[in-house]
Image (tube, rainbow, N blue to C red; front, top):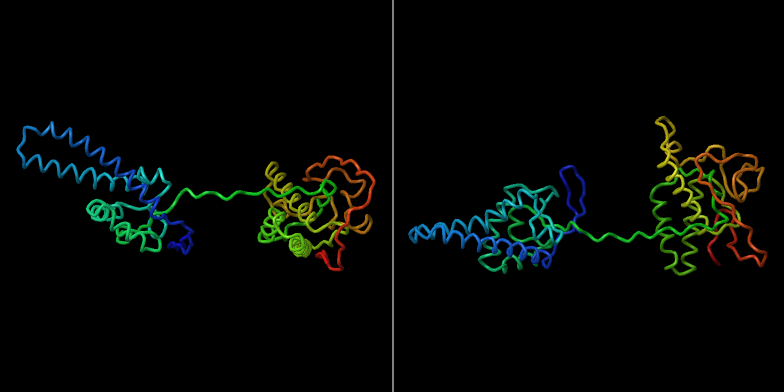
Length: 325
């Protein structure tokens, strides 16, 4: 990755192309240009058969310069750095500041390419590309350009596991407007990779993230809810609010983050995990007697689990979630 700084002081993370991909792109371009040169030479031979040898030599040199020098320069200028070979390999020529190239950049690259690529059969270009930290040949150095990769393999996005059914809809009254994006990203990364972590390490991380989330929301830690399950339920609630906001965009007006869909749902008291009557939400939904919660995603009823031995849960500490002993 190459960090380039534009004139607006914006850092661009570009991935320079290396020698194998650049060599393949150049070979593809040369195959096309040489084939066109051979076809043009055969046609010119029949067309100039009545001329003397000096005129035929001049026409041959002119066709060589036109096809192997002029056409590559014109193609890179008109396509903003994407020749046929570069298009096939997912490459592009850009300026050092990340902008598109112009005629003068393509002219310098094409003129030096005659020496680097044609006269020395690519030996000079290979050596210069191997020595350069960003894989640039001499034409790129003098023109102030860089060949980058446009097609970068995308990272696989892992889905966030769903929360337990008995936690669905429990945190509709939670105020999520003060939770920063960095904490959301950390929670999502943990939830998508928690099965790959050591159980004790994963439980400790979940406890820390849950404590940070509780501190940001201003609501007490829910009693009897494991830290990982709490994080899943809160992320699911945020996704539900995002979906509701996308389907029913709010009218423009004041309201800040609450109007954007991250504040507490209307009609629901703030807080989670406490007994009814203490200004908190009951264990499994909104306060009794209230109608459907505005903006909340409806949750189907869950059948009660069969009686049996209770599963062990994490013992909450006084200030929040406790990691395993």
